[in-house]
Length: 179
Image (tube, rainbow, N blue to C red):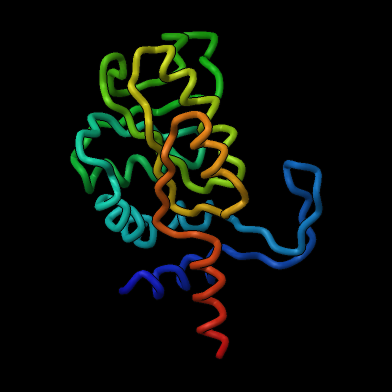
């Protein structure tokens, strides 16, 4: 399967039409349900296999963000052989009371992994927290960049965003299939 075919498969599985209230408070007529590719083990494995080539040399730990980034980072770890950390939005108040579980982060070069990036806000917040824990973080990798300013916002925080697919890729794949 080439990248355009993969984009069409993701688009077909995940793009919903209707009326949707977004986190921003805005209403949209399309919604991208990322959990549909995360819950499909064959599709998720194909995506992770392609993403493995995008992991920067020297990366020591993959850090998946709660919640969608956890499935992606686990699949990506299988393809790269790199250890994973699972990063919460806030540290839990019980047990280990940790923000991140799994691989040790302090003193290591960490790549943040996310499913879909819109504004990049959660990556920026989590990166600051991981840096406070002693991790070296200068990059993030996502399955889909919605191309709504996330890459530029992250660059302002010293984070380079890599993406397997973009909203443009999905739109182009859909348009080609509809011809």
